[in-house]
Structures are given as structure tokens and as C-alpha cells.
Image 1 (cartoon, rainbow, N blue to C red):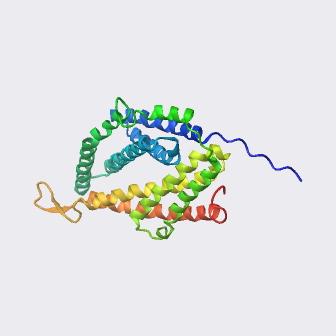
Image 2: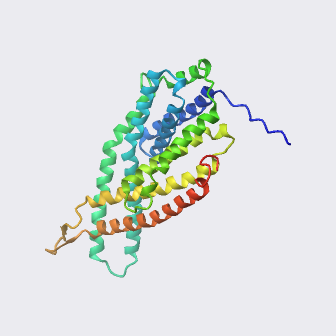
Image 3: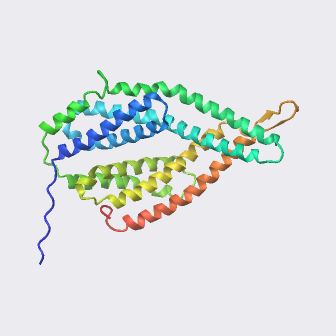
Length: 319
């Protein structure tokens, strides 16, 4: 009988965790500085991702830090994630609406005659775009304030020194593989708990919560993938696909809620005509986003069924 291959030596628990947390902290600080300028919406996206990665890692390696400090950092990072949600939604909406209107205008330019109704439609969308941009500008100071978390006596300014101290002074006999199995197993169970809502097309809130569960599961697997000899790579890819499709569904959901609050069914005056008509631009955009949501939902169900076949038919982990 061929001898069983020995398990590769594992790095110390706290040293491994601090290596990951150090990188996540550096990314968070870097993107906070970029978001402060407010000239590139991608900084907001990357800042939010970095905050989620750090939020996923801190509880796992909390035993490597003083408890009081850990709680303070954890609350601060959670606050960053929460404060960025609306900014990210607005950035996505503004970019989409600008492109949508550009395409509409290009289509009208090729028409043989100017159509008054199309002018009215664009007018309604222009008003909506102005509202979205005004709200985004209003919350920018909150984004800029995040940079203060890292400097002087900011709430996260002492985390780098704590990382260095944890690596040098804190010991842990915890096995990384065992910890990975327990934590990723819990994250998987939290995701699968949303399965009843998979076949409910209009379960917007549940689908959004499912997206968050998928993110937590993915980030947790990414934390341990290096220590687990890459055993999670295929599963990470599957979860990323689910997360992305749920994210696109969420973008549609945000649009639907936004547009339903724009006075649909009301009429607007037509200058110089003495008549009134509905804001067809808002109505058309709402129908467009509803249709796109239905298409994305069908793809989501397909990806979920694929995920179950590939990764939940036997052992959940390491499939």
C-alpha cells in the first residue's frame, strides 16, 4: 500500500490571519483616499469590497486581538460598509441612466420627424437624473469622512500596530483546516437557508439578503483558500456567479423602487398646448427594468440549480 501523503505544514493561526487582514486593511485605506476625491465611482465599489473582506476576517481571527479593540474596529468597518451602500446604488443608477438616455437620444436623432412625446420622455428622465446627482453630491461628505478613520486618533489608526503585535506575541494552537471547515460550513448553511425564496420571482428583500449571504460565504472561503491547498477555488467561482447575478437583480430592484416613487400615473403639462400627458419616459424605464429583472431571475434560478448539482449533492466543502 502506498503511504499516505503527509499534510503540508500549516502557518500559525494568528500569523496567517494577520497576513490577510493586513492586505485588507491596506486596500481599505487606499480606496478610502481615492473615494475622498469623489471623481471615480469605482473607488466606492472597491472600498465597499475591501470593507466586506475585512469584516469577514476580523471575527474569524478575533482571538488574536484584545477583545475591546476588536469590537471597536468591527463596529467601525461595519459602519463603513453601511454608509457606502446608498452611494454605490446612486453611482450605478447615474451611470446607467446617462447611458440609457444617450441611447434614446441617438435613436431619436435618426427619426425622420421630431416626436413631441419623446421630448417629454427625455425631459422626465433628465429631471430624475438631476435628482440622483443631487442626492449623490449631498452624501459625498460622509464618504470623505471615512479617510479620517485611518489618521491621527481615528478609530482604525491603531489596527496596523495591533496586527504587528498579534503576529509577534499571540499564540494559537488552532488548526486552520478545522477552522476553515467550521466557518465555511456555517456560511454555506446561511446561504442555503434562503433556498425557499429561489423559486419566488418577486422576493426582492430575500434575494438581496441572499446576495449578502453569498458574499460572506465567498469572502470566507477566499480567506482560507491558500491554507487549504486551493480546495475552494471551484466553489468560489460558482458563488461569485450567484453573487453577481443577484447583484444585477438588486440593481433592477433599486430602480423599480426608485421609479415607483416618481409619481407614476400623474400627468405633466405640455408647454404651449394646454394639454397634459403621462411621463412616458419614467414609465418606459420602469418597464425596461422590470423586464430585465425577469430575465436575470431566470438566469439566477439556472445558476442556483447548477450550484446545487455541483456542490451540494455530496460533501458541501471541497467539491
